[in-house]
Structures are given as C-alpha cells and as structure tokens.
Length: 133
Image 1: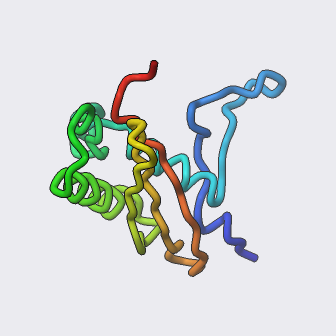
Image 2: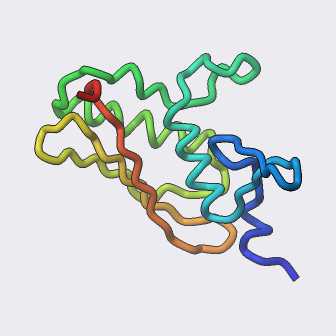
C-alpha cells in the first residue's frame, strides 16, 4: 500500500547531518523534504552546481536592490521559474512577496499543491535584503 510520503519521496536532510549512533545520514521525507528542496533551490546561485549550472534561483543578485515594483516582479518571476523547472513534485499556485516595516526582510510565501496527492501546503522563506546588524 502506497502512502503519501512514498510518492513525495525521501532524501538527505538539509543541511546534511549524520546520525552518530547509526553512522548514517539523516533523511527527510514527505512535505518536509519538499520544504528543504525549496530552501535549497532558493539559496543556490545559478552556475553554483558544476554538473547542473541551470539549477537554482539566483536571488543573491537582488541583495541591496530597492524594492520597487519592477524588482518585486523580477524576484517573483525568478522564484516561479525555479520552482517550475526544479521541483516537479509540486504545482505552485501562488507566490506572494511581503515586506514588513522596511527592515530588510522580504518574506517569500509559496502556496503549492502536491501533484500526486492534491494536498495543499504553504512555505515561507525569509530573504534578507540587507546585512545583519
């Protein structure tokens, strides 16, 4: 009998960690695996992976840029395109960008549906536009 987690898959946890007792790599599965995959996509620069130079989202190019309408549309397009090409397990229903109190943090909210199960979930990624104090 197949469960939802069997369909979604299982992979190494992010960041990679090792179980000291069993001398094995810690694994993640289900929706947590999808959330970790989205985080990997958002934090990877284009060209960073030698064997897959088109993988990633290239958000770091937007550091220190003003949050005007054209830049927000560009960021949203980067995210939607990266999800479309690099996360085949989900359909992104909505990508919303939200900034609170001009503190240099852009919250990226992705509402998505898992393709095989029709389950809906949300993922929020804080993208820091400025250096930390």
